[in-house]
Image (cartoon, rainbow, N blue to C red; front, side):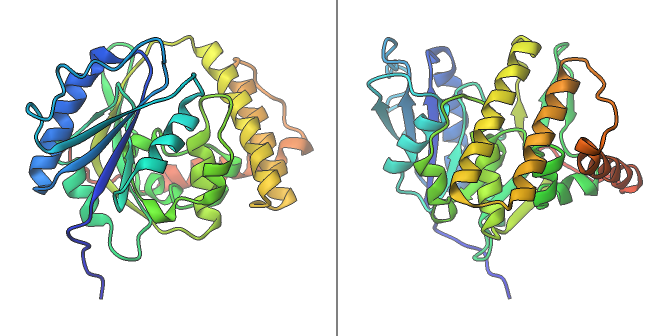
Length: 303
């Protein structure tokens, strides 16, 4: 019989890059989360912009008594993965939340997600609201198949990363693979893909809720530049996975082809069918069919 894990501690890690305008609102939401779980939270702000110090005037312990806030100052900009790793080195919580400076989570995020973290669970993943350019929102997970994809290694390799952001996840700190800590990504964009693949290769248990507890904000960044960066970062993931031996040669080949296929589609091209992409195309068609016949999920949006 599964029992809920209680009295567990939580560390929140926020990579900071010239983001003082976000800190007050993020502190508000973290304090609200702490109040609802009746426990203090360790908040590690990792400053990855040495020329812009974190303004602590509005996030003092007096203003936020449940936030044990610490600023980690990095000597030079090393990228978001490096910042997350440095924060993780100082983390003391049983569970870890990687939340970016402009992220938004529900005040009930930690209360609901910590309940999912039973003894056999390594990571809890929630549904997310995806903000569009016009300000409208739609959920990341619409159907049961979306929830199943989160636990399916083949989806990450041949189709896509179904988790939009680490901000959707509460992770057991002891379940984070050492390989993720030893290979900081040089290019931003895909360190989370590396983490999920490494965890699934280790048979990590993913608990998924259809509740929308996280909001992925529209940033307005240039799509073509972003796509090119994701391709470069994803190819770096392939190199790391090859060096660690986490995937088979066929899985590595499929991941590389999937990245190439996605880059062509993002550039507005329609790749012709070829034997080179046959497994990628077959898996994507199968995935689309599963989603078409999959029942819609009932979801809530905690406030």
